[in-house]
Image (cartoon, rainbow, N blue to C red):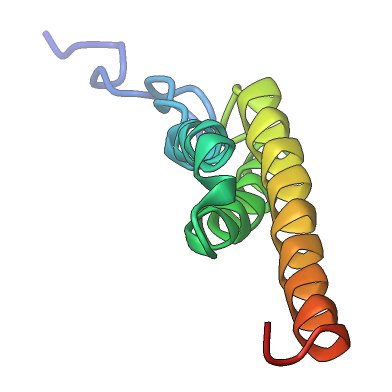
Length: 106
């Protein structure tokens, strides 16, 4: 007698095992954003970490929007910290240039 049921498997597409969320970008963005805050006074190092946090936070938010990640708040925190530190870093650079032009030789 033959088996009347089809062989076992995952079934139609979309019914397989659930995929693991890809939360790495949001997590790394948040870590870099937090690290960049105390480094903002270290002559450009904070600016580099801030820009990296902005880029990774943006990419992490895109992953959340696509449904591939579930840590949107971490990506948003890294993005915001990166913007704040990058803004402070640029402000310090502009202030340094202006003071060097206004007060030469001191």
